[in-house]
Length: 606
Image (tube, rainbow, N blue to C red; front, side, top):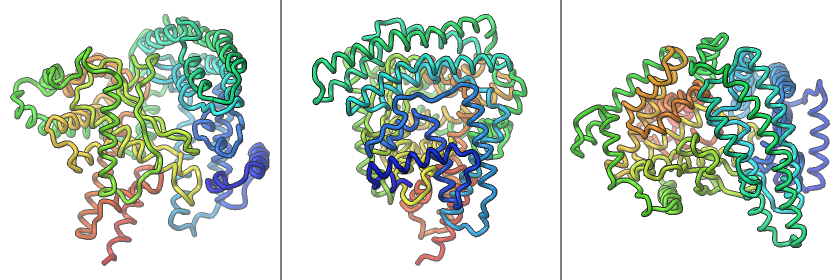
């Protein structure tokens, strides 16, 4: 499929797309082969998600702009249609005989079966999530998508951008309808969520259209189009500003009005245990994000043990720097205020911090051939988190490159407070978000050849985040954290992920309060108070997601140790990493299966 999109001429591809779309809308269409079925499932999903289609750059490279003027429908009706498609896809998949499948063909079947079954299992809790919250949601993700993902390389694409601006009201109307449906089911977000979302949205529209990121990003892209006449350029600017005033801002006002109506109803800051069948929902989210059968109680116990282990390692480094008194958090806070290790206001610019991150990435990239047999073709750059969302955003984030290679991957660094970014923490964040973490893993998945396209894009949190956390330790093993304080920064981040096992299960299973969770994380990590609050509040709206990092990392380390023990001198770290990364993202149960096969295949090598 990917080769088809890459090599087929524009005219033939247009015919292909039209025929495919026709097939997708045929209710009882069942392809004669598994390969065609995989393509059908993938295409029906992406064609129902115009924003995802644009992000992937699937069609632009061959001159097509299918649905680039549309936004993804998130109304209750669309959600129901999506759920029905998933059920039908699983039913159809199970009608194919998989008994004779081997190798990657067998793995493709198993990955899709796992994914679809997980989606069907979660259908009971379809409305238990908070689709608008202080961390993510249409209110902040859609502007970021428009600014960074919607490419403008022609007048046609500029027109599409404006058309999408004019569709904001339609999309937000579907969102509000979905939120009202949740409310009738007793799914109301925490009071801190309502407060922070209102503040964010009011700030977003509290400025002239010409100062909004939707306008400034548009103008920046349009100004790079050399073939536009001046009057055309001016007309585009005016139409974009008008669309923001007449569609975008009213859309936000609609959502603001709804959230104001929620204020008297959102009276608590409870975990999901307080929702209807909250225990069942959380148990599902734990399975969904970890791709294991672990229970909340087992994960809480694991987290406690990991916290104790990492504390001992951090204590050795802190004592070597004459910081032996008090708990780990207190001592890390003392170190975190030491001006020798901080960016000083007036002395360090945002540009310098971004360049320092880029230098860290460039340095480790030069060492990759010694540790990896396969490397991604796509590069990665560093940008600051957009100011409109930096207050509640995490310290770092990553956006993958599109298939057409029109831009690199992006590591977003949050620069809301430079004094809260110790120099010894920067390496670990860059390794996690960019190289050899998220960018390397995701870019390599996108570049896989001779596999069904869904294998490049399906995501499993435990694999994705487990890999990124694993690479933080790998960078230390590569010798790139020679300064003990850099290694302390790594251990602080590993502690941070171990604490997540405790507080996430604490909040949602053991009924911890928001304040108790904040206190535990502060005591064990010493992270800045604002960062701790943002993280704890993140776990309230993403139940179970934070568990995936440490569970995934520990599984990869376990599998690596197993390979080393069983292969002895035959073990090669480069081929092991290839075995992990060259299948795309996998549920941990299937990753273990693949590594066991890798071990068996290499035992006979001389």
